[in-house]
Image (cartoon, rainbow, N blue to C red):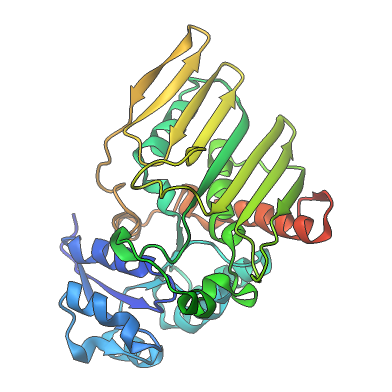
Length: 357
């Protein structure tokens, strides 16, 4: 690997995944966390302690952080509806950006993000499910033609709720006051299970579908009493090859990283010559083919550098002048965002809609 040390700053701690991403930067042999910034200083306390960040490298003004630390890469974790704003805040500094999922709240905002990037700098959108062994293996098997042409992708995913855990998946018991104050439950900030999880399914679903786009989309969201946002959504997308389904849920019986709930979180993929089930956190996938209709387990691929996590992958792409590919790329994520936008409008209008341009 290159001997260059990549300077990384973490800016905006709206999403608790910042702690996970900073840990990846902290553990990378050629990376250094040079600064962190958030308008609410108490949200940075845990990261400052965990990664030994000195007080002079902790900021409440992102402009001061950028000016004094001069990072090469910025990790951004703002509320979903503020991704465009924060990309535009940071991109002029001439940095590469790793944006935590989702891509944006709308396609228009996603396009603003791409346009804001400085020439020669890369934008990556991190979808944590991209780094699960089972999903990586499923994609490889699809690429190898194991199940023929993909015709259906079925996705169900979520957790007990966004405030029941923090960085490193530490369990919490949220209070009513925390729920009322959280952006996750604010409609104008991109809250709700659909905007939290649907992009996972539609973006990885696009990856599994070979980057094909659906023709039209139908979606229904629940309308929980006393909440501005949904906690459950079901989206049906019609492709030329058939129907795919994407379901999001806050309120699963258990969190999938502790005990898989029923329905299980993850994917079931049908092709012209077989099927694959690839569930979150599993160390295997289950495959049916015409030669093995009973089906059998296939051990999931081991993660190897530079494909172990998004920080490692982005640094490798930058070092080797390679464009971001797959779900982290703006091109694939934009297709996923088109489906999300159309699904959201469909749920509000209570009708089927053609895919938004």
